Length: 610
Ligand code: HEM
Image (tube, rainbow, N blue to C red; front, side, top):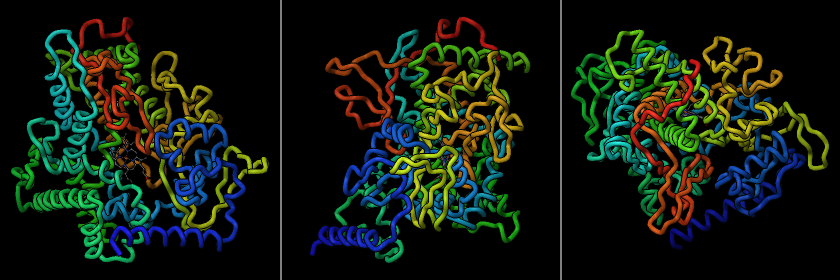
């Protein structure tokens, strides 16, 4: 029997086992919940939801409401959720029941080690306790000026591609934003540069991190087998399988993981030696040419803060070396693609709405001029760097960011599985298959639940009839000030906050448990995005820096055959911008925009209220 045959036999055995389980299991309580018909014997409705599924996802919620029965792989019944009370139960109240799937946790463990996205229960809680203070507002304030050179470098590499004067040049933003956000997360996380923004240098670590997602996605259909192989085969045998199986992407993935592991171990041990006073750490270079940022970053990077916090914590709370190491690649990976997509989306929107771009640029110019005047800085306004509180307080910038993250969440769908039977209460009743109203749904143990961030952020019951529209003004008062959202006025809705009267995302007291302005983009509860404040700060810094120097417009040019270039955003789990055929291949991520240097007409005619 060849290996391929062996693999096929294994697959058939798995199918037979799932079928047998379904026949012998008691009736699934989800049978009664309404939802779409199964559309494929193997993929159920998954291909409609996860592949270019923007319209399909929104229609599911529109047609069936906040809790929908769908068919997963091999027809398993699953629940697709966007109801606010149900989501509160899933991510906050019963987080211990609704956990990440084994496939997700074990797959991440193989790639990233013992980091936040590979652990559950008490171990995860302990890691969060150690890491949450590392992303505090005080640390973000310290970090902002230290990472400004990255935004400056992003601006300069783009400016260098432009002709002098007012001429424009088409530039694909995806590679540059991706390199820039990778530098951000590497410098802020590790205090290291991997020269990702230097076109002359190729760095193995930066290349490995950027290739991780495409490689893993190309073999996504193998993911369901991960728990089986991890549980029943040792590392030695798993490595043998990787050698034997005729799947080159598996070997590429292993190569990427090894590069990431080697470099992060090296940096980790250097950081620790520095902390213990064994070296001054100033001349650190990784085996692949990455470089320590030296005094500029000394002690302010997330890794150094985490090591110090860990060393001074009680024995019971202290993380092991493997757990600390596991956070390195976890944070870099979790923080770079999501932000790339969000920044590209924002620049794409600004290129489509030139009046919004002009208004935003005017707000930035006014803030920089005012700040320079208040500090007696003798600088051109374009060269002024705004401190944290000024940057975060710009109302229109904040509104543009929030509205983009609400309407176009970079990650649209998350999975959870029930570790025990439970009942999910609903805010808004849905219909049963017979048309009767249902106010709560019983779920057996091991039921998969899909959290629809997209449908939640578009829920008209919570965001109003214009929920689908991109309208930054919803976050502003009539005079252009920020609408106060959280109780403490920092714009962040936390559990227990009383959202201000009339705040967006709070209709008659009904709101989502999201950690950021009640939207679900960064999720909520104990597994919410730990880096959302960093992401917010980084995106605002990039936007203000780029818009001060450059103007962006949709591509006016055509391809070699005269076809117009039209950018379309696909929703494949992550949002992916592609060029529609025939001008593009409909697959490769790209956002080609016409960029030029800013000229005096690129500002709003009226000064904005700030
Ligand atoms: C626009 C940018 C971002 C978006 C939309 C985003 C979104 C999310 C979401 C939805 C989750 C929950 C995942 C789940 O439960 O399975 C998450 C988790 C996480 N994010 Fe982000 N994220 C962003 C940026 C960042 C940044 C910049 C960092 C780090 C600097 C980061 C670090 C993490 C980590 C470590 C987790 C795992 C948390 C845990 O399991 O406890 N993210 N993010």
